[in-house]
Length: 294
Image 1 (tube, rainbow, N blue to C red):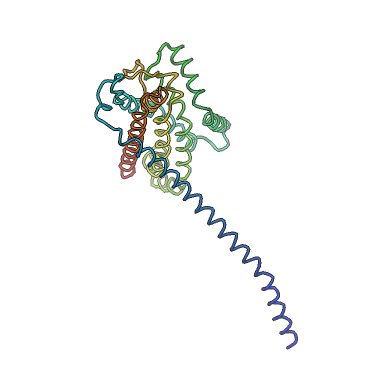
Image 2: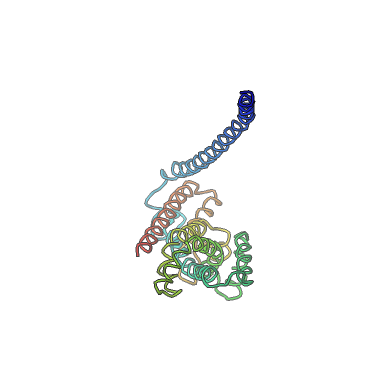
């Protein structure tokens, strides 16, 4: 009886000592959970505030004259800028997406583990991702505009943007490919498919959501870019040819706000810019959905 009483007393004492630790652990977990929820709420609130501020200040100033085909100092039409934005985005994506995607496929599917070339490419990509856009603009001006004699043009701006978004697309595509389980590849190889067929029929469709995320981020960076394009594409308010100068919506908004004479039109341009980004993202999601079904 004495030994049993001693054991019971020891257990009770141990439980008493462990109780504060459990309470501390639960309190710590609740605090961390609260911080996570608070950060999410603050981020969402800031996003809603920005969108609401743009819409409230911009929608009342939308008018038909802003969508006339030609620009002049009276209507300050944004239609040439809208068309230039779409052209610039498509040109940059047509160049950057295949290069970034095929490079990611090589790095993840074909290159041997521990390959020094792979390490060099990854380090270079991470370095290029951190370079400010103004540096890309300076390079584009010196090389495409001056050295290749393209002048301020849609082509010079598109090539500069393609180089700028290439690291982003490459890294996101590689991460998406790495997230595909190896069992998918092994099952395809077991059924007699070759590596190339496995990549394009099994791996790529499975990685499409991640690849799409990189493309959407790239579209956002292209549409919102100003510094690099001022040095390469120029600021002409016209619908440009391939070797002609043009301004995107972001540059159009920058010029209007910089002049200080058309602030209402600048807010209206911000609304249209937001709508263009949402439309491009929706189209990208639709295309990726159809590719995934195939």
